[in-house]
Length: 436
Image (tube, rainbow, N blue to C red):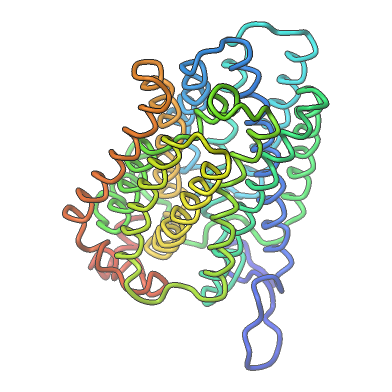
């Protein structure tokens, strides 16, 4: 029987061969909620971006749309990480989906009332950021509890491939539904998020962390995740590399500008542009699921982040729809390798009783790179022009790779990320006791 803190996702079938992660019912539910919620979120992003740009006709307005969700994430993500290490993660995930249900309903209301200013959309995006902050650490730290450790890297590959597939279908779905009106997009997203809340509560595996020391109270407990990441060169290096590379090289916020003014392909074409990086990423994710990286993983990750920067430059200079799609697909494929290596290291280098707080720190890095990256792209596009902003960002990504290669040799020299443990990552045998 599953105890409250016992790590026992499901009985393992008899026989010598270990089953696929898809054998485990709760993992299938988790995977389904990840897939459909990501698809709905991507569809909604297409609609919001197109509406805001249609209202304002300013790239900077798209930058603000990226900044708004980040502000509550910055404020609430660390406390949410502490909650994820103390409460049942299923309830936190379900609560997050309910907030996102309300967000879809509010966007629907604004659209039906004919909102002709951007600021009401920004207010709703603040609420969206709060909902994401609540659920992010719980979702990220729940995954290792659902499958045996020997199947964890396979679970990451499946999860990443499902997410990337959703980001292929989501933008295309959003662009297609937008042709029927933005209200249709928001209505579908609200219903989907509500269904994901219900599905999450159907997961039977306890979402509580395994038994461990309660840890220091108050502020020290809140910043324990920061202290742990700071003392771990693999975690710090991976998060910093991703943060600065995506902060500078992310061009997704400007896709509505490319679709409307440069490539002139309309909202349907915008959906295809948003789907292209995910298509490249999902293809690589399927390959990694069957042939995981077992050697020179760190060096391959650095090389792929550099390729991310090069592909960003190509996209920025392109005036061809097909070349732009190819550059974005290459960008996504390169990013998938980085995500795979970093996600594996981040989970396996962290003891379970710390995963919520460490996931919160990782969430700040990821959200900072994505949302602040969108703001940076919008700001530089307003200053220098859209094409120049994207090209400058790609060059900046390449410079970040060079700096990371020199600053984080431990990350560069990682061979097999599946062999990382909290002890090997920090070089301390007492890491769990100290961290908790």
